[in-house]
Image (cartoon, rainbow, N blue to C red; front, top):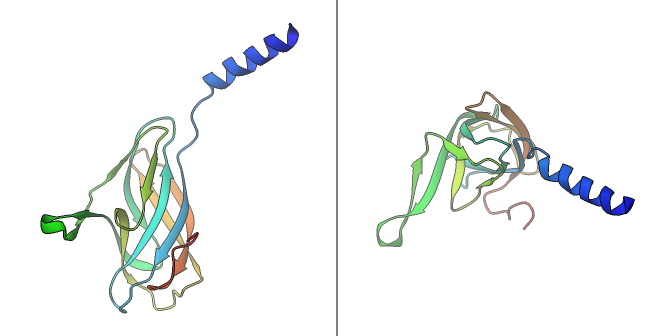
Length: 146
């Protein structure tokens, strides 16, 4: 009987546990094929116990960073538009990946080379800031994990 009570107690306590904290991982950056053109950063955001909003991403490796989204436009052509911000659902997962949401990195420094890691700083409406390292890949290289 004690074993049954212990199992029930653990189950009830784990159901009451708060959801995980706001976090980000899987960061990587693709360098542009043509020098002087923008590169792109990708990562995954894991929502915390409350909804939040990603407002901006920055890195010392580029002069400017903008949130963007790629989408199919008229006649099946891909287009891209800037995003003011991106909602992060409580307990949800938000992917920034090729062909979808991404961060455009303008004027990436010439010292940034494939194989390096650069820091990304994600700023949220809640006031939280997350930092992660992003692996740099060349324009024709496969994405990390591929």
